[in-house]
Amino acid sequence: MNVRTRTLLTRLAVVAALSCAPLAALVAPATAQAGAWKPPLQSRWQYQLQGNAKYAATGGVNVDICAAPQSGGACVRPSVFDIDLYADGDVVGNNTTLNTAAVKAIHARGAKAICYVDAGSIEEYRPDYQQFVDWHKSHGNSLLGKPFSKEFPNERWANINNDQGQRDFLLKMMAARVDKCAQAGFDGVEFDVVNAHEEGKTVTGWTVSPATQLVYNRALADLAHRKGLSAALKNDLSQAGELVSSFDYAVNEECFQFDECGELSVFVKAGKPVFQVEYETAPATFCPKAAKLGINAIKKAVDYSLKDMPYKPCK
Image: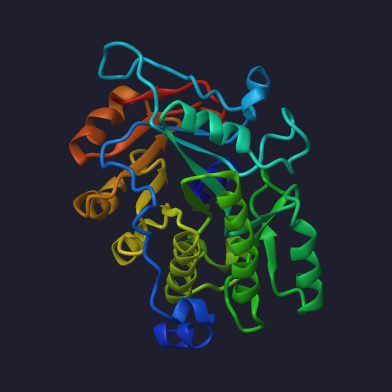
């Protein structure tokens, strides 16, 4: 989920930033390879990060989902699925099984799969969690910040500054995760929680400048591109204009609720799709706006869960 969503549930300069940047962020950025998947501007999508035991054979993902759109007519199927790197531990294994089964099933139906990776907060239930803890303890407790929120106490804000090599370490860990996305056969990567600079030290425990956020986000896009995967910018609306050239599409939560979707017009104008989800706002309210802006929007559960259902595409 995005930062604002989770908060609601409870809820220096460029030169200085670059001086501490890892080598990968200083060299010419890698663009999506010629053979890499680039989604069409108008694409239907599904956002399912939580498994359903009925679909254990496909990692808990309902790859045959079909729903009538808000615009009316027969049910339609998504051509893009945004799912977790790992199969839901309540359905398959114990949160360590790459969701290759879901990716294969999605591909068999002619659709594409985006690999969800949390790049800005560290979750306790991930198989690589102890590596973050060990690094944190051996570097003056300089990596793991405040709990994400009261509702999500099992993850902590990551420090993306680089005064003790935090960003270098994070990018190494994210590179390993992207490797797994590629291994599982995904087509793209969604890097979540990449707007710490907008939240501030009171929320995150760290002071992150906009310039530092740009360095980190661009480096993440490079990681995906170097593996032949496309990259999604998740939220970070205030930097959309500066990051549109680095990312291939955008993923957003609740921009219609907060009247911020206009910030994403730079992606649409660049021919890059925006995959958008609302939770509390009714489709009849936001779907006409989405159509006007050229945004691919869906409605999910009011309680912010991301199971297969409910699912209501605008068109």
